[in-house]
Image (cartoon, rainbow, N blue to C red):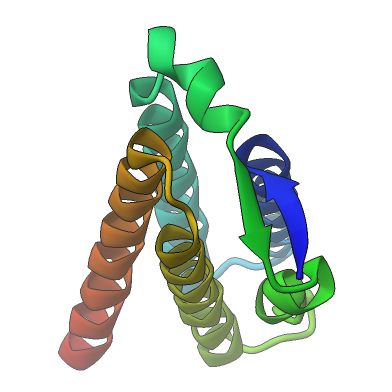
Length: 148
């Protein structure tokens, strides 16, 4: 087991968001597809909500939450599912949708793992709120997929 600060974990998540968003933006520019445009827009909205969730943890508690150390499985294992999500311009729309669902599912697993491993109440509450948000996103994606 190793230890990681919440700040460092969220930095890795932010990198995953950035990588995914950049690739989606590239695909969106290359494609004239409404579906790709919708996915890119949805992902941008998701990222804005994620940033707002981080901002809500602000105030006096923010540094305490971000500086909390969590005992975690080795970071390679912790982030492997998130890092394995790949989006390329050559992918079909269905593949991009599957990758987006996989990305959010990986975040659910990550936040679930972290929220069970942290003992600091404010950090646990914060990670649990991120988990609940991602679970909502996955449920909405599943519902949207049923409509199509």
